[in-house]
Image (cartoon, rainbow, N blue to C red; front, side):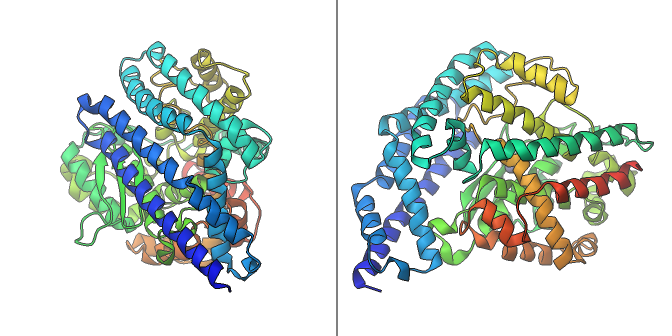
Length: 511
Ligand code: ZN
């Protein structure tokens, strides 16, 4: 390999490292805004975030990066780079080409508007007042539409919405999502109907027993430890804080999660902690040799969700996990849960019931919440509906898809933070994550036939190692469609996920 190529590649990777470290600092400022920031700071914070994002934009679009990319891709020795180096160059070039096309002003304005829209969303949600939220959402949507139009050309996608999907799920399209979601919807509705008609119905009143928040905090730590997310040791790379909406943020050695405790809904924080711990462990266990390189990032949001929903549902809502953890929960909760039998508890946490709130939804109806959002986003970006019409459309779809009546917009269109954050195109990732997790589970069952028996004994180590080796360690070496094929040998298919659900719920409900 020529010394020129080696030195250009080295320089490019040094610049990239700076950008990655810078972005990780930005993430901490975001985290602080959500967890610790005093209310008065919002205007200052929106300026801080705007400046940081402008600087990051400048760093990743600097002409020197463009020059280095040119030198590398035009070098006669380019083919001597290995697969990992080539992937790094590809990912840097993709990001560079997109970012250089986005005007700095648009990027800064979007970051500022995001902070304002999130803040307004919080207030409007508390006041159950969509009209308060609407003008800020309109502004943010216009900014995202502008960006989507620009990105569509660079990414060569068929529609602006596809360009946004590509940010979270590279190379995925609304057309392909529509295809798998149609099959998913059919399968989910069929299982839902069987559950509704089944003889065994759960008693969920046990989940309304009051557990003080300080005890729930201890439960959250114990759960994290049970699945291997370290938040307590001297070498811990994680921590748990409290926010309105749970999330995960961080990079390799510092990956934090948040949750929300409800005194009369203790299961809510249990499953949000497991969910976010799944995200955090994926991020912490990306290949350490690739730290500070683009290839050392997560594959996609859908893969992220596959890992969070694996820990939350496939592991965290299994009879095997609670065989081990229920005695611990009882010990922590004192007398409150002392009389609860394992089977009753497992059925209660797996109740299938159409509901209004996505984050509280069960595994079977969850996908339907996502399909509603995906259809609305697709229409918004195709200019088939407006921000003003959102509440009405939302409520109608919830009636049609889930048969529930939305009483106010806080439990309707304003329930999620995504649109307020400008994350249009993200929602499909959740359901894609479920689909991936079903495919991954099928292979895991074959490779580790004993993993569930181990789980009853509180031994999750081997399973975690399997996930690290087969999923996490691949980082961003492949696009999602190639990664799922690499792991499972198959293309994207909903069948394994639907058979996992069918098998699990037929046992629970007796159909
Ligand atoms: Zn998630």
